[in-house]
Image (cartoon, rainbow, N blue to C red; front, side, top):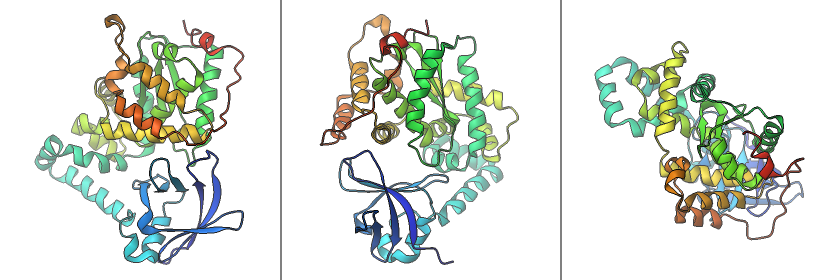
Length: 366
């Protein structure tokens, strides 16, 4: 099958948070970018890193350069097929979507036809298999699970209903989600009336923030930094990956088949997993970097993420133990990496003109 050579995408120059819409032509040696200014440039395949687009539903992202370099985002994953068709050997290091379905089919077949082997695999080999299994789980099933997880975590607890607080939180959330192309989830933030300093990303776009963490943020930009980090855990499916690695095989089989019966029991197991286990360091680094980039695309000052994580990293009194640190480790290396992502030139960011001061808004839940 012949695939078209021209595609639409967005180009980020690594300095400005505003994307430029470009037409991309797939050639034998690289991607030729056509800008609205009628200028063109070519990105050779050997210069590019593919950082997204390996799993179903993801947009394709290419990066060039070090640090916050140039970025190219293409909504259609079929561009990868065109690159492999026209690019030759220089494009072999990019993901080939044709292998995706075969890998998933073999994983499902192994799980359903050989229980003893599956048991051994899930006991010793689950870290390597969790990623393709997660990719095979239907989004609709993940969203249902997230809804039940939210209900399970908030059961017996008060949820903040103050309209000024809800408006402020939704305003920050909407600002960020509006800058995401092809959003697969309808994100929802619930503020739980609890002094715990914690936040949690449940599957399917459900984010829970506890009052203690909200009140520890000194500005809407710091709160946006937390939300951006948790949003990326959901978009990158880190949450589902963590659950798949640590729950029973019955859960995995039901998830792969899309069986929603017994979802409540699975939600209890998933909620316990999310509250007691932590993400891998690679997952944390990904959520940091892409959350940071999400803030920049949304024209929200990303220094809020740095200042809040730095605050959590400071020593706290024994009676004010920060649970968020245990699941989101704050280290000097992590903070140094985030600071290295700051743009080298001064940037103008948006302000949040709330009717009340942020310090007042964070108390409305009490």
